[in-house]
Structure formats: structure tokens, C-alpha cells
Image (cartoon, rainbow, N blue to C red):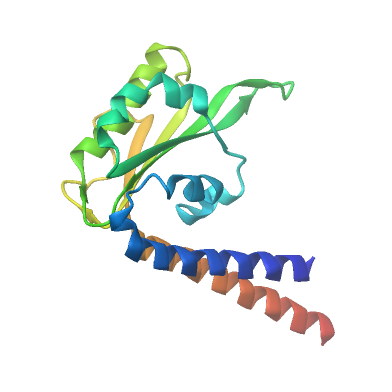
Length: 193
């Protein structure tokens, strides 16, 4: 198991290095190319997302497509959901919805991106695609921000936004992995002692 863990850590560190290189080149290509990468690697945004099963939710994305159509090509929006379950462990709606708004480096992110998260959550509740208990977390990822000093939007506690700068976000993810690799090596040394 330790070897598998070390291989996964190496793979993730390599991904972070590749993303750093791509972010230098991405201004010419736009943000949509990055969305699938973040969709498969939500752990880059928040370590808690590494332990929860999130899947792309195309039904939700289609239901609110008009709300974020004007953001392309400078921004890309992805919707990822985690199923809720009832006491019998049967799937029963959506427990948590992650909205990832990626902004192309060089383009400021701010109120427009936050409104996409808020309006999407509002419409999805009206359409009954998410319930009152569904937690909606919007990650606004970019290089520059304006007007995103506070993390919550409006007075709706079910829709929270968090701005993340590309560089520090990747630095934190890398730091977590390096620390995990160090702890894994320490346990190996202790096992042989």
C-alpha cells in the first residue's frame, strides 16, 4: 500500500507541475481546457474534496447553461455533485454541489462569477434539482480578483463562494502532498526500526 500511495503522490505532484506550465500558456487558449482537469482533481481546490465522491453533473449544467454562456471563452463553469442518501443508504438527491468557475489568467474575476454561483443555486432550487439541505460551494479560481474580499455571498447560507488564486492554490496542494510523502516515509522508517 505504501508504494501505491507514493506513486499517487508522485502522480499528483507531476500534475501540479504540469498545471503550472499550462497556466503560463493558457491565456492564448482560454479556460475551458482546464475544466476537465479540475473536475477530475477537485482535491486541488480543497483537501476535503479528496475523500468525497463527486461526479460531473450534466443535468444541472444544462439546466443553468444560459446563466454562464456569456462567460465563455474567458471563463469556464463546471458542476460536480455528491449524492445524498436516506437512512436505508439509498440515493436521495444531492447532498453537496460544487461549482467551479475557472477564469483565464489575465482576466479579473469577481462579481460576475459570484453571481453565476448564486443564480445557479437559486434556479436549481426553483427547479427542485437540489433541495433545501443541499450545500452549494462555488470555487472562483483565477489569477486576479476584484470585490471578493468576503467569502459568503448574500444572506443565503446554502450558497458560499470562495476565491482561489491559481498560484497559492497549487502551492497549498503541493505542500499537502509533500507533507503526506514525508509522513509516509517516516512511518516506513519506524516500521523497520
